[in-house]
Image 1 (cartoon, rainbow, N blue to C red):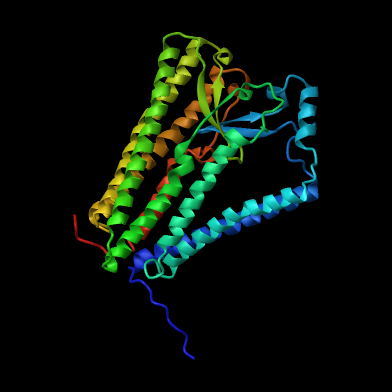
Image 2 (cartoon, rainbow, N blue to C red; image 1 turned 180 degrees about the horizontal axis):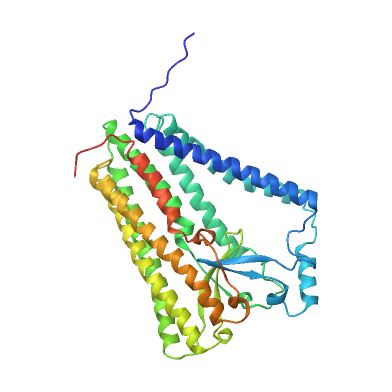
Amino acid sequence: MKKFDRPTDIIPEKIHKRLHLIYFTLKALIGATIFLILYLALFTKIMGLPDRGTEESPFLFHQYCGTFFVEFDRANSFASDADYSAYLERSNATVEPTTAENVLSYLGMIPSLVLVAAMILALRSGDKKRIFCGRAWRYFLFGGALYAAGNIYAYIDSNFISTTSDFDGMTSVFTERRQYCQIYDILGIPFIMICGAFVLLMYEKQLNSQNSVKVSDTLKTLSALIIAGSAGFIAWRLGVRTYELIRVMSGDKYSVWLPFTVMESQTRYMCRLPFEDAVSAQAYKNVILFRYLRDLPVFALTGAAVWAFVRVLLNTAKGEFNTKRNRKYLRNSMLLLTAASLILNIAGWFETDLFDRSFTGIFGNTTYTIALRAMTEPLLYVAVIWFFGTYLQAIPESKSE
């Protein structure tokens, strides 16, 4: 019996090659992640390594802020060797989980596995040329919604539910923390996935001559939410940074707050940059002014990139898809974010040197790193927008301008 041939979309070969590359990249990342997890688990089991430091190896963990990180160890985080030993004993203690805890831990893996499955199906549809006839928008929508829900839960759990902290028992400045909602890290990629789903659905409705008014309204609503969230976050952070700069430059002995990410964690905190640890008042002013002047164009470029992306959504809401204008907006958005990334990362080289010369204590020993480790890397969103644009170009090109 002859095998049934499923219908496929008509996609230009150039675009199909990109779709294949995206799908291959996802599979490679999944394979590399599984290998790394198994390797680390096996290595730890064979070597009998504890989760945290030891008496012989005092390193504990890193904490990332943009393009630098600070290292936590016995010398800079504990009042005495006895406090450090007590911390190790508590951190490395073997706790036998109950049956209920084991069940919950396995159940907690289900959302992540479902998200991975949804992404595999979504990207496989592009590789197999079944984006529209296979209704791939469902996988993007479900995956984006699940991703957003997981990020929101992780934020609520780390800030409101969890009663333990990596800093319990320490005496460093990081024991004094404030909550920090890094909204683009929580909702940025999920929203792009959800927007992509509705763009594909909008085209599918028009392709099948169906009513697309509700989908169009949804795209407009998403656009409004993205603008409101982005503008609100930029205004909040820029306003706080400006207030802090004024206080510091006016001569107040005022300590600003910096956003940090704990190593290999979704935990985000605002931590105080202690004025008293600066080698002089002028040195403190120099650091704060440098960070402000570096981040000001990054804010501006990022805001412009968001607006360019939203223009694409508003155009698709009007029925304009793979047009020259939309491709230009996406290209501009990626270029603006790339420029923001260059400013952020190149200036980071000078920032670490400035910190080391200006502070004693934990902030006097910073190390440069890429912004991706703190999840503040604009290039991450360049990649995601490129994926979005590739799927948009799978739609037949329109001459509408």
